[in-house]
Image (cartoon, rainbow, N blue to C red; front, side):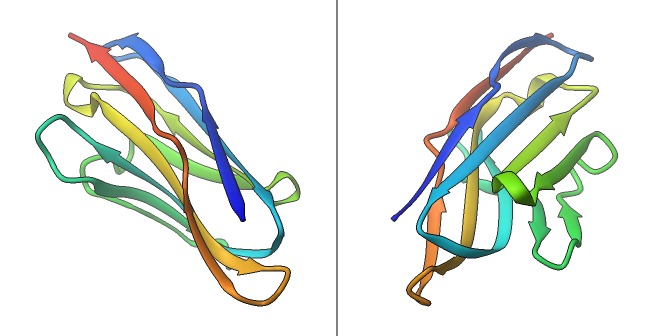
Length: 120
């Protein structure tokens, strides 16, 4: 089993910054993708940033240029640096990871979710 533990959410004023972290642990042989999603009240969960094993990153248009995803492969940890935050960034943020167990089978796991609130 793979566990993802998130940290770093909270309350911030518009224009401010926050950094989210998500550490994966368990019987992991290798990680294929780590990603961040968010879900605002009354809305569907949306994918906002991904980082692949090959080093490529992708962003939703809504966060491009403001958010940066990065990974520390040695620590199986993914970060989301969020700058120039807006009220519409208020949401619960979830990390997701997929890859392979030591056994060779695939896994996909979610973090517990972090509340990020941006006050205007």
